[in-house]
Image (cartoon, rainbow, N blue to C red):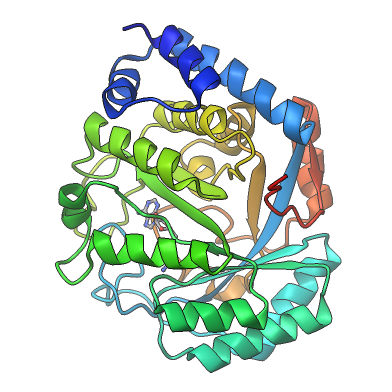
Length: 348
Ligand code: SAH
């Protein structure tokens, strides 16, 4: 096997076997990565024309019933101050975000059942009522089919729920026994069935992850065909059991972004905050590797320091919001522009 041939095969057939992916991720060279990047960015250019979609993210609660071993807001972490934003505050974040160009609001939080289905549906409806031209993405973890259905009926368009690892044994090393891969996968299938544009994904370099695990992730993504894929490096958080593990590789993350772009040409693929945290120009490099979405924080400044999923997260000490126009200024030098457009996955 040869990496370039496999990348060509992925481009023409849109699919590889688990062994082929395993070979790619364990033996690619810098030259192979650049080869994949060239194909991936060419595909992104032909579909999106060097335009980058923008999203404003509201981190509205850091209460979480879960205890993911990697995550800074896990319930066992007693070192953080917990907060919840009320509906009015969430809406005012969206107002501020709308004014500076965002047309997708991502509501993200820990798994916090304080927000009942009815409360979430009310929040979704009130945002949609005010901004019928904006999309709402939820990222609030595992809930029942019925709950997801209520969110969908209230007007939510998209849902991000990373699968975290498609290998049940690896998944079990990242989560306590109460959280299982089969539930997560069932949630993903439910979301798709309900018509959400659905996002899966995983961290790169999470503890105990092997090349075989990444191969399983890629095979899962190839089969599930999510409309969005979130891939970012693992970054340790000082108050978690994984505090001493090293951060994931930027290079591997970039390579995987390229492979996913080649595999699913139209997928909405963010250059993640985590990528921008490990390396200051990480997000720009992500765009060059084939990503086409950037998500910016539009949460209140006061609570940002308490939504620390990992150490040194970007924008936690900002004092101003980054607008779509600001992003455009950052992307122009590398030949891209940032756009406000709602940016739904295009099925056609
Ligand atoms: N509670 C929601 C949102 C989780 S936070 C949910 O369960 O989907 C969003 C993503 O951040 C997670 O899916 C995880 O992949 C990522 N994340 C969490 N901790 C991280 C860390 N230490 N390093 C990098 N990414 C992390």
